[in-house]
Image (tube, rainbow, N blue to C red; front, side, top):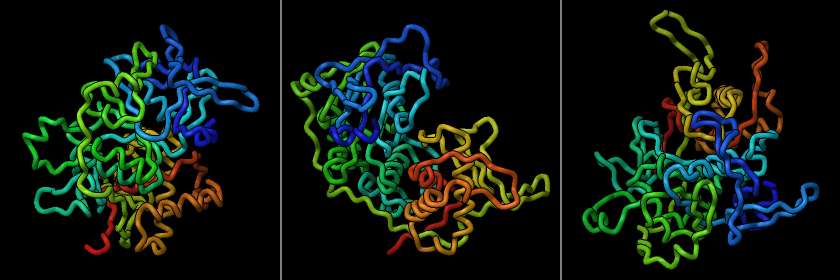
Length: 393
């Protein structure tokens, strides 16, 4: 199903009969009671024909900009989370066996406090405090808006072709700014995502699904509008276009997506030193106990990857950690490369030689699970010890 999306101009598909709700907000198991089977509205329905499954009807999410609206507790975020997991196949009984997103789909959110090293966020942030250069943004404590801007650029550099964005987990001032605030605060240095979202697709072929429930501003940039009502989708594209919507705002120049960063020597050191217990180990790679899908302990780094929703298994955490160990071994070849290019080199090595290339010699067996470039480069970009220089700076 995933391989057929592009033939139909789609970035995602949700088959009729899918059961999207989970047992709870902290469970990945399907809800068993009171679940309404998903059924696509006729206006947005697509029928895909498969050699074995035959004709499968469902909701087609087309390339471009799709906005999903609705009241609280009506299934907007549930739908988005299902799309985020649609990059992987599901086991029978999950309820989302025929929920599919393109392979390079990525959820994006604000991450206050994360480290950002040298990313060019100037397409979204024109000026920064203390005369910091937004074309080479360095911080150990990003704000919501700067972290989300960095995440979008990082994911585009790594090849994302679908961004999944929920207003509840986004920085409000980064996502949109209404016409009254534009008049009152014309000097705001933030170019909202809604001012750029058409460019994301038209110039870079990156589609977007945005979950919105509190503002109509996003409707003016949408190709398609889907409303969730009691977990049932309704196509409101025609109704939205009939509204007196805010006009789109001219952007401040082209959308610049480039990576001028170069890795410096000494990155990816796995050495762990515990000063309190007066001991050290040459290598520390493991998921933090109790946060097995959130924090990777690598050397002295605690890499917070909870926003990388493509990590769904603790063995993927180990895979990323041991990819960094391989990166340490290849560090001389990495000097001068951008983190994205180097991460792609690592993924190519694993793809060519298999996951066993990550197994340290003479060490107990480690269980690995394949991960995407998007998650690997995401972890590298969140290394607080990452040392880069920016060409021309």
